[in-house]
Length: 355
Image 1 (cartoon, rainbow, N blue to C red):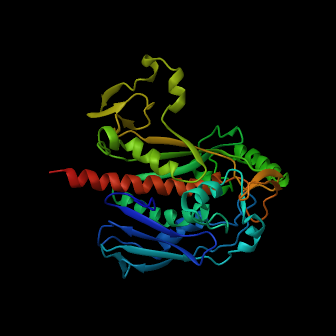
Image 2: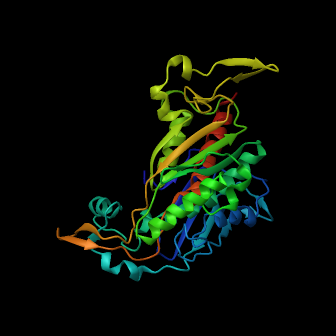
Image 3: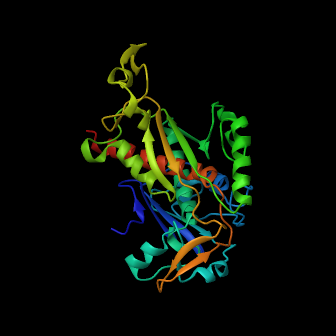
């Protein structure tokens, strides 16, 4: 296993490096005959694209996707969909001074030890640049979920300790931090600006809400739906923790407080609370799936840091180049994509097992 693929039926493989010629993906397991346009994929990529605001890296990539296979006259053919994005604003010379240095918080050291060689140009394969292809594949997954009336909305719940208090989904795409609370968004932007101007970075929390998920997705014991979702979301660089429903707050609750009591409403079984976050015993229960991802501050910062060189010398470094002072706003789109891919795969697995 190479670790470059995810999914069992809906299977996605990505390739490419941050400052290489291009990045790409192969998406297999897509049903034939589904309407799918280039615009469907590009729309999601545009949400993630760098260089859009002061909250993101100023690297100017248009992220124009090319479809190499699997779509004919606006319809999927059932064969693998090949996707490619050329890197147009790669600038590896920014990283030449760091070629032989293990940057704090980065994958440099572990890649060097694991492979004996590493792509020092912006982190290569470990760069967040790779996530553009996850978003492209996620756009296809979202299209498949929409046919089942399953929707996914993501937003920034918290940045640098500033928490969104209001949940107005209409304003998420109308502010640069993708917060559902305009007042909180203004404070978040100010905090990001402050960190950027001081050469530092900040982290936060992204929340995902899934509506319309049917009962029964996920498998007992080792393939629980929450375990699959957690693994998918944790595969995104910068994510340091995932929780569902009440999450870690459940540790301070009584059983009588936490238990989601089920009752009949209009001949349909529903829960009075949703502390489990839409998943019971690893299987979707029909309630909204709610998950949150904790995201660390960006590793690449302009402030002086102590770093170790390949010949084991200590050196003070300041990382130049173009980096996000906070990755949360763009991470929203990536995490949505990972959730979409995981749910489509679980849906197809459930259908494959039905008789």
